[in-house]
Length: 169
Image 1 (cartoon, rainbow, N blue to C red):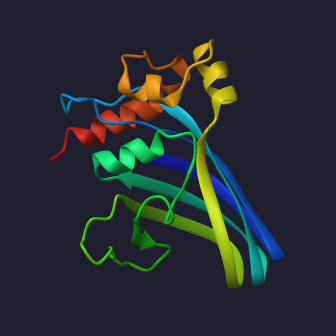
Image 2 (image 1 turned 135 degrees about the vertical axis):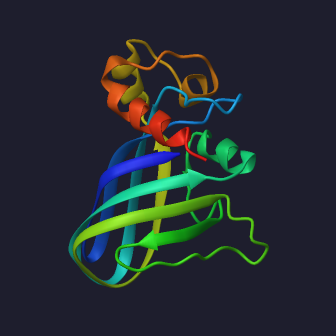
């Protein structure tokens, strides 16, 4: 799972988006979640567009192929991994690819005004500097979410929320 609160997007013909967040994986035994690894979202766009927007984004990675891509050095959602839209804004939709095998489900809530048509791309990549700050030493997202890394104190609230809702079935 990836959570990016406050993803910022702004444009006047040329646009950009930027945000930071965290990823965590359900543990192999299905009980509990891994320590959070930090990620960044960066992207640009070009087209007939204007406005500014802030979006809270949640990505649910649905299979092992999606996890492998997410743990790579960087990937582009939609190009390197198939994505399907969950509820977006006030609309509700459930889309997927033709084979019904979307690797990532996306959910978002947007604030602001943005209009236009654009050609765009956004990458997700590990934020190694933030990981070093959080864990006190250089560490990769692969080591954090697939190993037994202890969560930092600052992640207690996130871990509590993840564990609260993962126990419901």
